[in-house]
Length: 217
Image (spheres, rainbow, N blue to C red):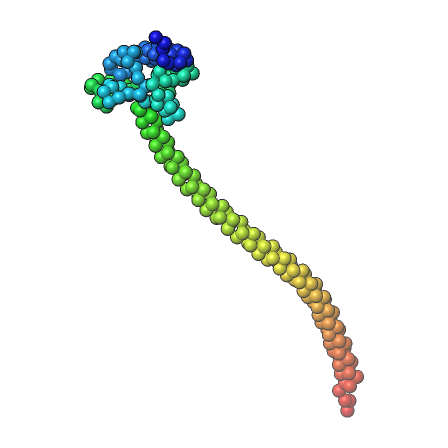
């Protein structure tokens, strides 16, 4: 009787079962699950009575929408290559209670990654808050610096203006001093002239008294 499945499907079916069995042995699924799965009973689409289910990355979901016998050779090779990397079997919630020392399932790994991501988000928020605070402080310091520079510029302008006024006052004082010196010299000459006139006047008066003299009897 002729096999109803096409040759490619028959090959994929046989290859998928054998490689899946090898993959379970290599990946240590029995130790991970806590119980043994017969390689011939491996199913990609698990039922309610199965003791295991599949944990896989979202991009590998299409592999678990078909049975092994329905997959192509390429899909079976992909199953062999990716088992333990992007998908793996995990104990179903309804499975017998078999505890393992370490949860190495993708679900646990994803949960750990989500926790780490949440911590990283909190760290990121703290870093952003610190950056905003430092930015505000830098802006405040920059404003204080700008105000100080403006005040310094104003004081410098005032100082330059006061210096110019002082220079002008010095020049005016020099002119006044020179004029005062001239007036002092002129006053000295005037005093000398007055003294000379007074002396001459005294001489004249003295001469007149001598000429007039007392009258003789």
